[in-house]
Length: 140
Image (cartoon, rainbow, N blue to C red; front, top):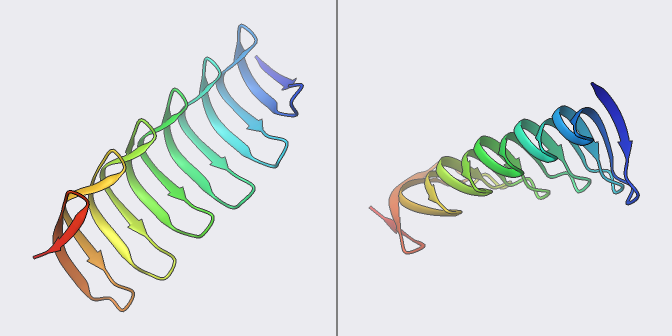
C-alpha cells in the first residue's frame, strides 16, 4: 500500500510501508531539497536507490541498511566521481576515482583507501603503474 507521510521536521516519504515505517519502494525528501528514490527496509535505504543532495552531490547504487554497499557511483559536489564497490559506506574493492581536472586512480580500495596495485592516469593521458603501500603510491 502506498502512503504519504509528512514528518514534523519537514521530511516527507511517499511509497510502500510496513507497520507505518517506509518499507519497499518509495521516495523521501528533506526540507533542504535532498531527494532519495529507491528501496527501503524498516525505514532505512536498502537495495537500489538514488540520493541527490542540494549541493549537487549524489549517490546511485546499492544500499545495505542505510549504507553504501555493493556497486555504485558517488559524485561529490566538486565533480570528483568514484565508480566501483562499497562496503559499510566506504570505498572497498575495485573502483575508479576521477577528479574534475582529469586525474584518475584505478585500483583496489580497502576501507576507503587505495591499497595494492593501482594505475594513475594524468590529465594529459600519461599512465603510471604502481602500488599503494601504507597510503603511499610507489611507482613501478
